[in-house]
Amino acid sequence: MVAIVDKDSCTGCGACVDDCPAEAIVLENEIASVDADACVDCGSCVDVCPADSISVE
Image (cartoon, rainbow, N blue to C red):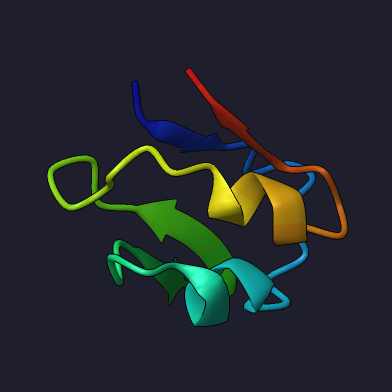
């Protein structure tokens, strides 16, 4: 499983970037992007996203 970002609803706030313990999320063109190889499936980003744009699948 890996974190998936809904690019249409992501606001680019960076909360997930700051919270990711694996440093697997970066902002690209003001949209969150997850490095699937670095993601540890902890779900922390899901909990902090104010736009509910991230899910773990």
